[in-house]
Amino acid sequence: MTDRHIDDRPEEGYTPGTTHAERGAGNPRLRVRRDDERTEFALDMEEVRIGSAAGNELRLADTEPVHATVVHDDRDEYVVTLHADGEMNSNPDSDATHPGERTETLRTGSRFTVGPWELVFAREEFADHGRPFGGRLGGEFSDQPLQEARPGYDADDERLSQADVNDELSQSDSKAD
Image (tube, rainbow, N blue to C red; front, side, top):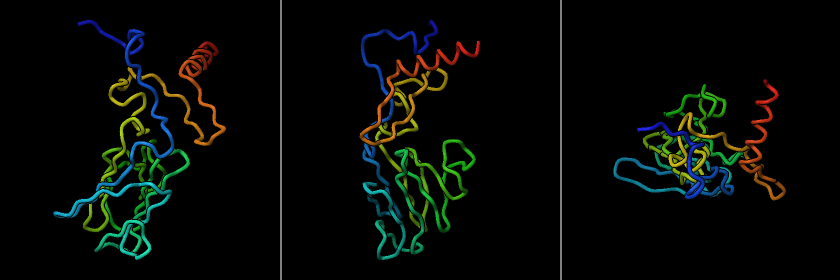
C-alpha cells in the first residue's frame, strides 16, 4: 500500500468545503432524556434557558428554576453554561471551549446533565465547526488542510477562498525563510 496525502488527491470528484455554513444551519438541537422520556428541542433562538421556571424556553421538571443556558454566540457556536449542579463532558482548559469552569462549547455528541435529565447536542456534520472540510470525509489530523477564517455572519462579509488562504500561508512561509 502506498502512502497518500490529502494534497495528492485527484482534481475530479468530490472536494469537501469548510463548515462555514449559514448561521444556525445544520438543525442544531438538544436530545433530551430521562428514564423512559425522550424528546428533541430545536435550538432555533439566540438563548435558551433550561430549568423549571415558567418563563424558560425548555422547561424540565425536578431542576433548578434556571439550571443552564445555551447561547448561540457571534461565532455561530452553541455554548452551554451550567448555573446549578450538573455534569459536562468537556475539558474547560481546552482551546476549543469557552472560558469558565461551568461552560462548554457544544459539538455533536456533547453531553451535559441538569438534575435527572441528560441532554446531548446534535448538529449536522456539514455545519458543526468542530468538523472542518466536510467532517470525516475531508481528512483527519495531519492530513487536513487549514480552514479559512470564520466569516462575520453578516451580509457585508467577504469570505476568503481556499486559494486565498493557501496564498497567505505560502507568503507567510516564505517570509519565515
